[in-house]
Image (tube, rainbow, N blue to C red):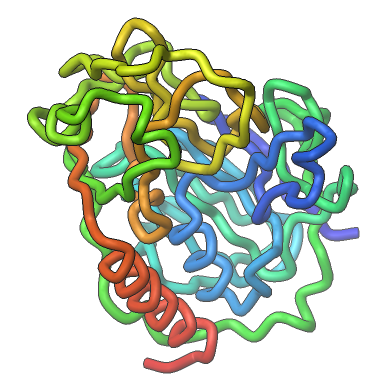
Length: 313
């Protein structure tokens, strides 16, 4: 079976598909990409189905060696990329041959890149998904980040049809700061009437102990009206929990399935990828929007991605 060799693993490189959906009622976290938009875009460029597994690369990129001819693409965070010493561009498909080495150099913007390989990464699935969940150590390669010497099996490339056109439009990546839109709730009634205004009043800094599970935010304190603790309830992707400290926590891909802190607001689906491109030490601002605006943003994003998947120039 064809495979790729991890020569250097980078800081935190994991196998991710769309996530382990359908098991949250059993306490199994979803995992999946921190930036779903970039994940799907990378797969679309090489002609993979959107649910194929690929590599999520965080802050410092890997060096990868290929053992057969494939079409490859990188989307998301911008890195200086070289293939056998020659520069290659992000968000374009490019071909590799047996023995080719792809190197990620200096990071230019964003925090997480997605490396898609024609045919997808074919590690054994766990509960229907190949996604790595670091906390429970399931999925991917032993539930852990990649290490030097790992060999990752690849799926058959014949069913994938690479798209030679670049993706339509290039999403602007955060330069250390992102403004994301949120919908209020689901526990808005448990907060002081000024809580949403307070949330929007100034940027929050992403704490150093933030990770794929969630971002600990440092900024304006949010006041509770009925106390911080609730009976444990669901924790959607992008929800803002507020513990008794008043400092929000933004829950991300590796979040737990339920939580016992009141939830003030939730980042809209179209903006969660922007949050996923932030790193500890960066800042984030929140803006409350309407459900109509949230739906319009999601439709626009979907149209862009479908155009790439359909091979439109």
